[in-house]
Amino acid sequence: MRQSRTIGWAALAIALLGFPLIFSGAYYEQLAALVILSAISASAWNLIGGYAGQVSVGHAVFFGAGAYMPLLFYKLWAVSPLLGFPAGVAVSLTVAVVIGVPTFRLSGHYFSMATIAVAELIRILVGNWDFLGASIGLMGPPTARGWWDLVFRSSVPYYYIFLSVLAVLLAFTRWMERGRFGYYLRAIRTNERAARSLGVPVSRYKLLALMVSAGFTSLAGSLYAAKFGFIDPNSGLAILVSVNMVIMAALGGAGRLLGPLLGAAILVPLQTTMNSIFGGGGTGLTYVFYGGIILLIARFEPGGLIQMTERILTRLRAHAARSKAQAGGVNAA
Amino acid sequence: MLLEANDVTMAFGGFLAVSGASLGVAEGEIVGLIGPNGAGKSTLFNCLAGDLKPTSGRVVFDGVDVTRANPETHAKIGIGRTFQVPATFTDLTVLENVMVGAFARHPNATGAREAAWRVLELTGLAGQAERRAGNLGTPGRKRLEIARARATAPRLVLLDEALAGLNPAEVQQAIELVRAIHRTGVTLVIVEHIMEVILTLAERVVVFNQGRVIAQGPPNDVVNDPAVIDAYLGHSHARRSQQGTIA
Image 1 (cartoon, chains in turn blue, purple):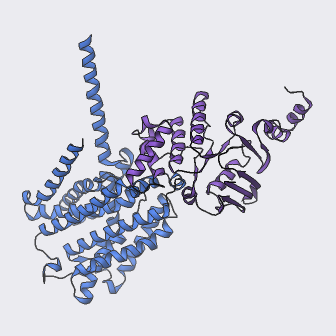
Image 2: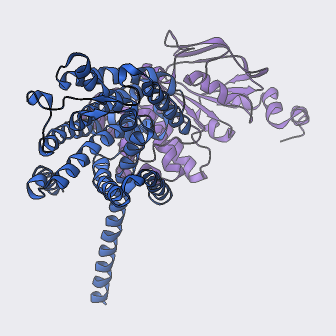
Image 3: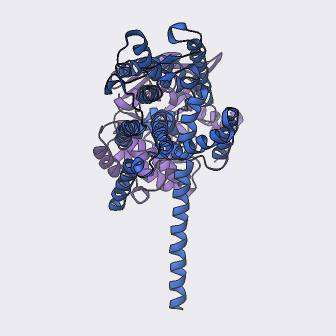
């Protein structure tokens, strides 16, 4: 069991590391980089939305903060966007505390609605604020002055940068899953009152989970800005940015280590294909498509694809064991 | 006194669910808190557990005022509780449920897992450790409630109708479990509205009616108290029983 798990991890690592070497060409390289980037933000969302069960639909705020800060630093002082990364994280952590303290008093759908409201408020605010480029947005360095500008012509360097950040995030998640932090978050997700009666400081752990989640989401935003060299309210702060994270995590399996990665690996290629089929008119259809997915997950498979696979596997194993036992019975007779 | 409630009043609007209740629990005791439905037992219970903040009065645990302390602080200082309707972490396994409790004393997972196993053995749940807790039936979930509370290494456990909803055979097993927990040195306060159960378990009984303590003492004295009979069975019955027309 342990051995097969190790082999599984090694296979996944090799597949991810070797992907751009096998599927070369600008289209696949770009697609792969996008999958990993989406997996980072969805995995970051997973910490608070999946493990702790606090379904935030306002994570675009953290993504946006992470995306705006590097380009703002470049605009103001013409410094490397890299210097804006920690600034984005700092802003996100501050926003997380400011949003978290009042909204965590709400539970369930009310919490989700409050996060939407806050995110939309900030989107509109930024869209009208000239300092942040208003609705036009901000640009990064057009050509690289050095590696530290993070401007590469190919998607491959981005792919590996994204992959290493994802690796760190998943390693952190795994560590969290195994320790007190993870157990407490799962307890909070199922029954807050019971958790408190067992000495779980619910508010503190929720806030902590939101802060870690916000920090990593902000990093994803910064990486996005570095790759595309451009950010505006629509690409960084729109509700679709938040919804993307929620859907990817939910499709693969919210509260599961590899759920968001699986969700991203399915949804990003689908999205890209849809965009190329429907062209510029496809944006509206994306919403319809997402609505369909939300409905299907909520109705048939709230645990996501990972749980569905596990259930099918268990059933198959049970079936195999039963037919084996039956065959034995026939022989004995 | 390990736990002392002084003149606790809990008002919901103009309604006094508990009015001026006082109660003392000594270390090592099993105290039964009984009374008819709606007597205010659960409200007082929740005041003791930190789920409700009393309108007035004081709750003191081992010399520390816990009247306004939150539930997690109660757990930390050694007051465990169970819920009337089991509040199982359904997605977690039985072992993981108990580990959540054990983490209160053991910050790392290895220590918490070992402590949880000891509690599972004590409570007879070891055979079900890897089962998903959501798949347990009512008796299993009630047992898990107690196990989880025990895992926080409490000095006092408040049991809220730990025996309600069980059949007679299950009640017997649950009584054994409660005794086993008591033997490990835990003081117990049990809320029940089934008299028979409490009489076999508790050393001392506190009877509640309409938000007030109407009697307390050894179980046998209390059940013969006219005020108690009155509360449970109504006026006429109490009068007749005093006149000896009831056996």
